[in-house]
Length: 87
Image (cartoon, one colour):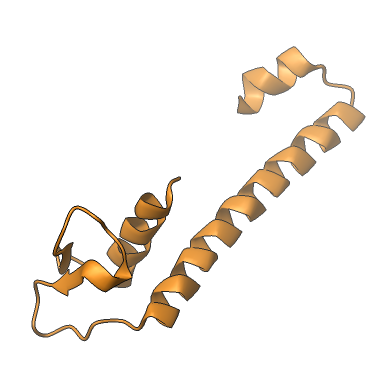
């Protein structure tokens, strides 16, 4: 994912609905605007923490997938069989 995609994903996970937008094409924290007055703008630290949470979850998923593939190989499956099971 790009930085812009991480930012949008993090913001979308913080609240439901279309609560945020950007004041310019340059999508970053400084151009973040709110469309819902009942929501308080998250701090930049909160947004960065959410982005890191997403990145950590992606890394964890990739690590678990690699570990699972290794365990299947140890059980005697070949690469084609593993790919058929999990891609």
